[in-house]
Length: 306
Image (cartoon, rainbow, N blue to C red; front, side):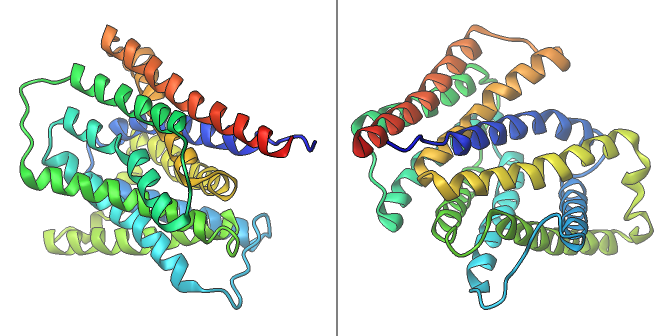
Protein backbone atom coordinates (compact mmCIF):
# COMPACT_ATOMS: atom_id res chain seq x y z
CA UNK A 1 0.00 0.00 0.00
CA UNK A 2 1.40 3.40 -1.03
CA UNK A 3 2.34 5.65 1.88
CA UNK A 4 0.06 8.69 2.12
CA UNK A 5 1.62 12.15 2.09
CA UNK A 6 0.50 14.54 4.81
CA UNK A 7 2.00 17.62 3.12
CA UNK A 8 -1.43 19.05 2.17
CA UNK A 9 -2.58 18.96 5.82
CA UNK A 10 0.74 20.45 6.96
CA UNK A 11 0.40 23.20 4.35
CA UNK A 12 -3.15 23.99 5.46
CA UNK A 13 -2.08 24.11 9.12
CA UNK A 14 0.79 26.49 8.33
CA UNK A 15 -1.60 28.63 6.25
CA UNK A 16 -4.02 28.94 9.15
CA UNK A 17 -1.17 29.76 11.53
CA UNK A 18 0.04 32.55 9.27
CA UNK A 19 -3.45 33.99 8.84
CA UNK A 20 -4.00 33.80 12.60
CA UNK A 21 -0.87 35.86 13.25
CA UNK A 22 -1.87 38.41 10.60
CA UNK A 23 -4.58 39.91 12.84
CA UNK A 24 -1.93 41.17 15.25
CA UNK A 25 0.09 42.75 12.44
CA UNK A 26 -3.03 44.31 10.95
CA UNK A 27 -3.82 45.97 14.29
CA UNK A 28 -0.29 47.34 14.31
CA UNK A 29 -0.65 48.89 10.84
CA UNK A 30 -4.21 50.16 11.25
CA UNK A 31 -3.36 52.23 14.30
CA UNK A 32 -2.53 55.21 12.08
CA UNK A 33 -3.59 54.18 8.57
CA UNK A 34 -6.78 53.24 6.70
CA UNK A 35 -7.73 49.67 5.73
CA UNK A 36 -7.62 50.45 2.00
CA UNK A 37 -4.08 51.83 2.35
CA UNK A 38 -2.96 48.67 4.09
CA UNK A 39 -4.66 46.35 1.58
CA UNK A 40 -3.39 48.29 -1.45
CA UNK A 41 0.23 48.40 -0.32
CA UNK A 42 0.02 44.81 0.88
CA UNK A 43 -0.89 43.41 -2.52
CA UNK A 44 1.41 45.82 -4.36
CA UNK A 45 4.36 44.53 -2.34
CA UNK A 46 3.24 40.92 -2.78
CA UNK A 47 2.94 41.32 -6.56
CA UNK A 48 6.34 43.01 -6.87
CA UNK A 49 8.05 40.31 -4.79
CA UNK A 50 6.43 37.49 -6.76
CA UNK A 51 7.32 39.21 -10.05
CA UNK A 52 10.97 39.31 -8.98
CA UNK A 53 10.82 35.61 -8.09
CA UNK A 54 9.29 34.86 -11.50
CA UNK A 55 11.91 37.00 -13.27
CA UNK A 56 14.75 35.08 -11.63
CA UNK A 57 12.94 31.79 -12.30
CA UNK A 58 12.58 30.95 -8.61
CA UNK A 59 8.88 30.52 -9.36
CA UNK A 60 7.75 29.11 -12.70
CA UNK A 61 4.73 30.65 -14.41
CA UNK A 62 3.51 29.28 -17.75
CA UNK A 63 0.08 30.54 -18.83
CA UNK A 64 0.32 29.81 -22.57
CA UNK A 65 -2.83 28.22 -23.96
CA UNK A 66 -4.59 28.20 -20.60
CA UNK A 67 -8.04 29.52 -19.77
CA UNK A 68 -7.28 32.93 -18.25
CA UNK A 69 -10.96 33.51 -17.52
CA UNK A 70 -10.75 30.97 -14.71
CA UNK A 71 -7.81 32.80 -13.14
CA UNK A 72 -9.72 36.07 -13.29
CA UNK A 73 -12.77 34.50 -11.63
CA UNK A 74 -10.53 33.03 -8.92
CA UNK A 75 -8.86 36.39 -8.25
CA UNK A 76 -12.16 38.26 -8.40
CA UNK A 77 -13.53 36.06 -5.62
CA UNK A 78 -10.31 36.19 -3.55
CA UNK A 79 -8.85 38.65 -2.79
CA UNK A 80 -10.99 41.34 -4.48
CA UNK A 81 -14.55 40.57 -3.37
CA UNK A 82 -13.56 38.93 -0.11
CA UNK A 83 -11.46 41.83 1.18
CA UNK A 84 -14.05 44.42 0.16
CA UNK A 85 -16.92 42.52 1.78
CA UNK A 86 -14.92 41.64 4.90
CA UNK A 87 -13.52 45.15 5.49
CA UNK A 88 -16.85 46.93 5.19
CA UNK A 89 -18.79 44.08 6.78
CA UNK A 90 -16.68 44.36 9.93
CA UNK A 91 -17.11 48.12 9.86
CA UNK A 92 -20.91 47.84 10.01
CA UNK A 93 -21.12 44.81 12.32
CA UNK A 94 -20.44 43.84 15.89
CA UNK A 95 -17.06 42.11 16.20
CA UNK A 96 -18.71 38.99 17.61
CA UNK A 97 -21.17 38.88 14.72
CA UNK A 98 -18.32 39.19 12.23
CA UNK A 99 -16.52 36.25 13.84
CA UNK A 100 -19.63 34.09 13.70
CA UNK A 101 -20.33 34.91 10.05
CA UNK A 102 -16.76 34.26 8.85
CA UNK A 103 -16.78 30.94 10.70
CA UNK A 104 -19.57 29.77 8.39
CA UNK A 105 -17.13 29.55 5.45
CA UNK A 106 -16.34 25.80 5.91
CA UNK A 107 -20.07 25.01 5.97
CA UNK A 108 -20.66 27.05 2.81
CA UNK A 109 -17.67 25.37 1.11
CA UNK A 110 -19.02 21.93 2.02
CA UNK A 111 -22.38 22.79 0.43
CA UNK A 112 -20.85 24.29 -2.72
CA UNK A 113 -18.34 21.44 -2.95
CA UNK A 114 -21.19 18.94 -3.02
CA UNK A 115 -23.03 20.89 -5.72
CA UNK A 116 -20.17 21.89 -8.04
CA UNK A 117 -17.39 19.38 -7.34
CA UNK A 118 -19.38 16.30 -6.43
CA UNK A 119 -17.60 16.06 -3.07
CA UNK A 120 -19.36 14.00 -0.43
CA UNK A 121 -18.95 14.29 3.32
CA UNK A 122 -19.77 11.53 5.77
CA UNK A 123 -21.89 12.18 8.85
CA UNK A 124 -18.74 12.09 10.96
CA UNK A 125 -17.03 14.71 8.80
CA UNK A 126 -20.07 16.96 8.86
CA UNK A 127 -20.17 16.64 12.66
CA UNK A 128 -16.52 17.67 13.03
CA UNK A 129 -16.89 20.55 10.55
CA UNK A 130 -19.88 21.88 12.51
CA UNK A 131 -18.00 21.36 15.79
CA UNK A 132 -15.17 23.54 14.51
CA UNK A 133 -17.63 26.24 13.42
CA UNK A 134 -19.40 25.99 16.79
CA UNK A 135 -16.06 26.62 18.52
CA UNK A 136 -15.61 29.93 16.68
CA UNK A 137 -19.23 30.89 17.36
CA UNK A 138 -18.79 30.08 21.07
CA UNK A 139 -15.69 32.27 21.29
CA UNK A 140 -17.42 35.11 19.45
CA UNK A 141 -20.53 34.80 21.63
CA UNK A 142 -18.37 35.00 24.74
CA UNK A 143 -16.96 38.34 23.52
CA UNK A 144 -20.41 39.83 22.94
CA UNK A 145 -20.69 43.38 24.23
CA UNK A 146 -23.09 46.25 23.71
CA UNK A 147 -22.59 46.38 19.96
CA UNK A 148 -25.19 46.27 17.23
CA UNK A 149 -25.03 44.93 13.69
CA UNK A 150 -26.85 46.69 10.89
CA UNK A 151 -28.56 44.65 8.15
CA UNK A 152 -26.04 45.96 5.61
CA UNK A 153 -23.22 44.64 7.80
CA UNK A 154 -24.71 41.15 7.87
CA UNK A 155 -25.25 41.22 4.09
CA UNK A 156 -21.65 42.31 3.48
CA UNK A 157 -20.28 39.59 5.77
CA UNK A 158 -22.45 37.04 3.96
CA UNK A 159 -20.81 38.29 0.76
CA UNK A 160 -17.40 37.61 2.34
CA UNK A 161 -18.47 34.08 3.27
CA UNK A 162 -19.74 33.34 -0.25
CA UNK A 163 -16.74 34.89 -2.04
CA UNK A 164 -14.23 32.98 0.11
CA UNK A 165 -16.18 29.76 -0.47
CA UNK A 166 -16.30 30.36 -4.22
CA UNK A 167 -12.52 30.91 -4.18
CA UNK A 168 -12.02 27.49 -2.56
CA UNK A 169 -14.25 25.80 -5.12
CA UNK A 170 -12.63 27.49 -8.13
CA UNK A 171 -9.09 26.91 -6.85
CA UNK A 172 -9.86 23.22 -6.34
CA UNK A 173 -11.58 22.95 -9.73
CA UNK A 174 -8.76 24.55 -11.77
CA UNK A 175 -5.90 22.94 -9.82
CA UNK A 176 -5.34 20.49 -12.68
CA UNK A 177 -4.73 23.32 -15.16
CA UNK A 178 -2.94 25.92 -13.03
CA UNK A 179 -0.19 25.35 -10.48
CA UNK A 180 -0.49 26.83 -6.98
CA UNK A 181 2.14 29.41 -8.01
CA UNK A 182 0.13 30.48 -11.06
CA UNK A 183 -3.05 30.82 -9.06
CA UNK A 184 -1.32 32.81 -6.33
CA UNK A 185 0.48 35.10 -8.79
CA UNK A 186 -2.81 35.92 -10.48
CA UNK A 187 -4.40 36.75 -7.12
CA UNK A 188 -1.54 39.10 -6.21
CA UNK A 189 -1.68 40.79 -9.66
CA UNK A 190 -5.41 41.51 -9.62
CA UNK A 191 -5.33 42.43 -5.95
CA UNK A 192 -2.56 44.97 -6.60
CA UNK A 193 -4.38 46.46 -9.60
CA UNK A 194 -7.83 46.80 -8.05
CA UNK A 195 -6.93 47.91 -4.53
CA UNK A 196 -4.30 50.38 -5.68
CA UNK A 197 -6.79 51.83 -8.16
CA UNK A 198 -9.24 52.32 -5.26
CA UNK A 199 -6.52 53.79 -3.05
CA UNK A 200 -5.37 56.07 -5.87
CA UNK A 201 -8.91 57.34 -6.45
CA UNK A 202 -9.32 57.95 -2.71
CA UNK A 203 -6.14 60.03 -2.54
CA UNK A 204 -7.11 62.03 -5.62
CA UNK A 205 -10.56 62.68 -4.17
CA UNK A 206 -9.00 63.83 -0.88
CA UNK A 207 -6.47 66.01 -2.69
CA UNK A 208 -3.45 64.33 -1.10
CA UNK A 209 -1.99 62.20 -3.91
CA UNK A 210 1.50 63.32 -2.84
CA UNK A 211 0.98 61.31 0.37
CA UNK A 212 0.38 58.00 -1.44
CA UNK A 213 3.57 56.38 -0.13
CA UNK A 214 3.67 58.27 3.18
CA UNK A 215 2.74 55.11 5.15
CA UNK A 216 6.12 53.68 4.19
CA UNK A 217 7.76 56.23 6.49
CA UNK A 218 6.04 54.61 9.48
CA UNK A 219 8.23 51.78 10.88
CA UNK A 220 5.20 50.03 12.43
CA UNK A 221 3.38 50.08 9.09
CA UNK A 222 6.42 48.75 7.22
CA UNK A 223 6.92 45.95 9.75
CA UNK A 224 3.27 44.91 9.42
CA UNK A 225 3.39 45.29 5.64
CA UNK A 226 6.40 43.01 5.26
CA UNK A 227 4.57 40.28 7.16
CA UNK A 228 1.19 40.81 5.49
CA UNK A 229 2.59 41.30 1.98
CA UNK A 230 5.17 38.52 1.92
CA UNK A 231 4.20 35.95 4.55
CA UNK A 232 0.42 36.39 4.83
CA UNK A 233 -0.18 36.98 1.11
CA UNK A 234 2.43 35.13 -0.94
CA UNK A 235 3.35 32.25 1.35
CA UNK A 236 -0.07 31.73 2.93
CA UNK A 237 -1.96 31.74 -0.37
CA UNK A 238 0.65 29.46 -1.95
CA UNK A 239 0.01 27.05 0.91
CA UNK A 240 -3.75 27.48 0.57
CA UNK A 241 -3.75 26.82 -3.17
CA UNK A 242 -1.38 23.87 -2.70
CA UNK A 243 -3.63 22.27 -0.07
CA UNK A 244 -6.67 22.79 -2.32
CA UNK A 245 -4.85 20.89 -5.06
CA UNK A 246 -4.78 17.70 -2.99
CA UNK A 247 -7.54 18.07 -0.40
CA UNK A 248 -11.26 18.27 -1.03
CA UNK A 249 -12.42 21.87 -0.65
CA UNK A 250 -14.49 21.13 2.46
CA UNK A 251 -11.55 19.34 4.13
CA UNK A 252 -9.13 22.17 3.34
CA UNK A 253 -11.41 25.04 4.34
CA UNK A 254 -12.02 23.76 7.87
CA UNK A 255 -8.35 24.46 8.67
CA UNK A 256 -9.11 28.18 8.39
CA UNK A 257 -10.82 28.09 11.79
CA UNK A 258 -7.43 27.30 13.35
CA UNK A 259 -6.58 30.93 12.64
CA UNK A 260 -8.97 31.88 15.45
CA UNK A 261 -6.97 29.80 17.94
CA UNK A 262 -3.67 31.27 16.74
CA UNK A 263 -5.00 34.84 16.90
CA UNK A 264 -6.11 34.27 20.51
CA UNK A 265 -2.68 32.92 21.47
CA UNK A 266 -0.87 35.79 19.75
CA UNK A 267 -3.16 38.38 21.31
CA UNK A 268 -2.67 36.90 24.76
CA UNK A 269 1.11 36.55 24.53
CA UNK A 270 2.09 39.71 22.64
CA UNK A 271 -0.81 42.15 23.07
CA UNK A 272 -1.56 41.15 26.68
CA UNK A 273 -5.22 40.54 25.86
CA UNK A 274 -7.35 38.56 28.33
CA UNK A 275 -7.80 34.80 27.89
CA UNK A 276 -11.25 33.65 29.02
CA UNK A 277 -12.77 30.25 29.70
CA UNK A 278 -14.92 30.73 26.59
CA UNK A 279 -11.78 31.00 24.50
CA UNK A 280 -10.30 27.87 26.05
CA UNK A 281 -13.45 25.80 25.45
CA UNK A 282 -13.99 27.25 21.97
CA UNK A 283 -10.37 26.64 20.99
CA UNK A 284 -10.60 23.01 22.07
CA UNK A 285 -13.79 22.61 20.01
CA UNK A 286 -12.02 24.06 16.96
CA UNK A 287 -8.98 21.80 17.38
CA UNK A 288 -11.07 18.68 17.83
CA UNK A 289 -13.26 19.65 14.88
CA UNK A 290 -10.35 20.31 12.53
CA UNK A 291 -8.34 17.23 13.39
CA UNK A 292 -11.43 15.06 13.64
CA UNK A 293 -12.37 16.00 10.09
CA UNK A 294 -8.89 15.16 8.79
CA UNK A 295 -8.58 11.95 10.81
CA UNK A 296 -11.90 10.69 9.46
CA UNK A 297 -10.79 11.54 5.92
CA UNK A 298 -7.43 9.80 6.38
CA UNK A 299 -9.07 6.65 7.74
CA UNK A 300 -11.46 6.54 4.79
CA UNK A 301 -8.58 6.94 2.34
CA UNK A 302 -6.65 4.12 3.99
CA UNK A 303 -9.70 1.85 3.91
CA UNK A 304 -10.21 2.53 0.18
CA UNK A 305 -6.57 1.80 -0.69
CA UNK A 306 -6.14 -1.18 1.64
